[in-house]
Image (cartoon, rainbow over all chains, first blue to last red; front, side, top):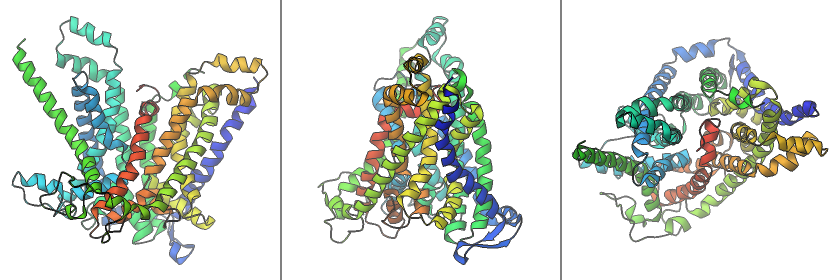
Length: 291
Length: 283
């Protein structure tokens, strides 16, 4: 076929593009991760072997950021997935479905910097609506952004607000796609609403649940924007996520790009592992199936 | 069956759904009313939930005391956001249509190339940002539109290929073959036959790429540093984390930043969902 050679010309642009903007920088990053490298002091300083990698495990701030990232990822994924599933199951077939659905989707369309700005106002200790609503229950003003107990909760709530909608959309679309005949057949056999949900609806969107969990895990492991906007990693370094740590180390406090590179390599490896799982869950080979 | 219990259950169902609908909507409502409040209503206890009287001061920067973020200040960042988003989207369409066509029609590169391209979208921005900062620093292109366009296109072109491969798969191959019989080569067949039919898919990835670039924060924060190239989200981020911030103007610029992203995302929602699930679910 005449396409035999031409087909490679079509993909050349993207290959060159990725080589220049990702592969080459990544190799370079791997290289400088073995050096004490400070841009402010100009160029490569000193070969330090795997010291930067070891530092990631001994540095108490790095260890703190790893456990905070793990905490926010695990709790965020669990709460968001369950809440999105419940909302999707409840909303299908109810009167006013399209209006409710619309209201559930809006947060995911808002740029993260804007939502961070909104929540920063809401969480304001002295004038914020959150503390105002809590005052009805006799709860005294909480310092959402400055208290080591509440700051992680503040981050979590904002993430739930912003990204439950995304999972909701995924599950809702899946539920809508279940052929009506399945449900009708089960109803004729006398299945109750709960049985329909347990043995038809949830199994039918099992793959989507998996995809949703993986997508959110990958995103939460990279969490940065809301940390920058709401807590700035504080109080102290309590709400440092791994990405925020790299930002601080590489660009703000340390300006140590060698250490930042080592941390980035670690993050990259974790994400690549999860992405491999995701691509398997997505059954990518389907796309090549038609031939 | 007891109609009473099912009525009660139905009631509970509505209560839960309404509660969460308020939870999701209230923060947006708060930003919108804050943007239209007069300056004496910004900081009050109890907070004021009804924006009356309405004023446009926060948008036009008339409140002399708080001129921190009136729209006039925002314009350069708005221009940067627009330019970067438009150029990124155009570049994405060019790269993604070519690649997706080749993969869809000739299975070029097989699973390995496809997985590689798809995984680009998942890359952690900070891990891209660190080495790119060093490379762009030495190339002298930090703080330019081009710096942002280049990194954004990594993410958007990957997503574009996700969406377009399944889109092209749905176009009958007989159309290509008819074009070959008429003497077209693959590139002509692509330009004359496939591109025109794929217009909805192409518009969708343009829109999704635009919304992504419009809202991106971390890479813009790392790679740009003043109004020559900085985008709207970074401007907002910089102001809100400052001390004693005027709420009205910042809410106004937030509204300006939010509207295009929200409208465009809703327009492309169908493609967003089928792109994310690789066509397993059609929204």
